[in-house]
Image 1 (cartoon, rainbow, N blue to C red):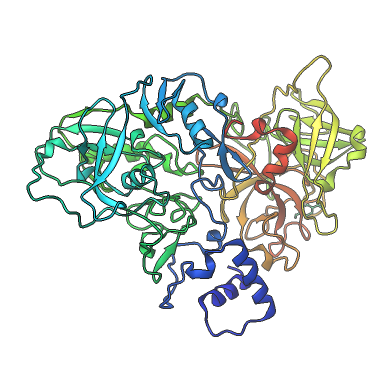
Image 2 (cartoon, rainbow, N blue to C red; image 1 turned 60 degrees about the vertical axis):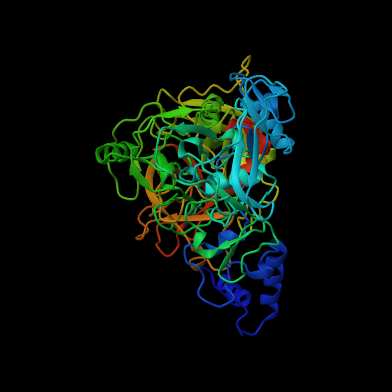
Length: 626
Ligand code: 4AZ
């Protein structure tokens, strides 16, 4: 945590620290960025220490369930400049079953309807199949003292009677969806309440319905309703929806991005108490059983190893074979309230179609990017101090940039005809002088896989600063071979372009490669590689010269592995839990080579996702098709 940041914290808590003018300015800027701070953003009035599971610096970014830095977008959305935006219906996969909306209109698939709803939120999902006049799903509240609360009643499309929901199938997840459906955009306030249930109301427990939502629905009609043969009496589900006038006391509360306040102890518990998930997206740890994604997001424990990736870092679905075996061994399965309970043996009758399965199916039908996965990997052999020699196919995204007679820099193939490199490596006006050598190992003994491409264009970042090395990033477009529509690089594989700054963290181990000099300035002719760790807080090594958002330091504690002169423009790649390789950095600068007190500095590629996609086109590098 930086000193400046600590200072701000003191100011926001209202301590008696004298306000310097720079502190006042910083506070003003922060308030402009987040108006909620002016009330009591996670700063209890009692002045108690802040909740330490929450990452304060991250909160300032106001992340919600629409922030693709932190979450995956829905299949009917696309990630643009950090926000999940609505796709147009025609961008949905064509396959699927027809569905009906609340406006009585039919849509060819669930994705088409959800995409339409994304643009016109007043129209919601009603039912599967074709639209007929009588069929209407309906939710209402009864026995409450105001219209914001009550026992939940639903009328399913093909049932005549309104029915109650069983309390044991009811959680914050379902209650949020019910409140959204009823027109309370901030979701649920409480699932307990004092309701005026008539004493003569006799409900047979078999008459209540079970409901299961995923938490991404906007109407209860999208959740799955079942009827169970259980004879046990469980009580009926009720809800108090959240309204601003029925506010929580301001002390000890967490301020959600949507303006809702929730008890502080509900932040980072895996449950979307805010309704916009803003209480789960900036976490250093999670409460109870919730699972902490490497990206700092808490998800409910039952989403771990459920076959759907929830963490952008993929860690909720890795190592699941072990987990599954354990679960089966212990006879454990998903329970209603978040924990794990014994598998229920009662019969269940499905009353509504399973739209969650439909949503997963749509996801699987979306086009997938092929990047970051090597075609054939083999076992490495030789080892050399300060890096090891690479073998054919080890770094299929690594390219060499030849300027005239000399190989001056490295580069990274990112797909199509595009090479990513450092701005200080190239000049747009010199594009005719450049050649891109792919699949090269040793430039004294060119291997058979080697291919050489001309260059048609060089784009240097508009804000590249040669004095400070800020925005040291450039794109090189290769020429297509005559008569060809695409750049066909048979032996090359693109590295994936990271779209979120949370995909990798300090201390993650990554790989650098290049033809750069050895520590003793000795020339190198064959491609070498080495493992380095991402380093946080790099300002301490380069005070005043390190720009956190644009740069990333990496190295080893003894400095033995480092990039050096000639490696510039080349890759710092990191592998995710699924062994997919991302270009996390571009070799940019550093004081000397191989000195532990001066780690290598790389351009932080994730910060330039939008800049890159502007030139190369979103579909080439975007995980979400556009
Ligand atoms: C260079 O001159 C250079 N040790 C590249 C990387 C580093 C230092 C210098 C990092 O291209």
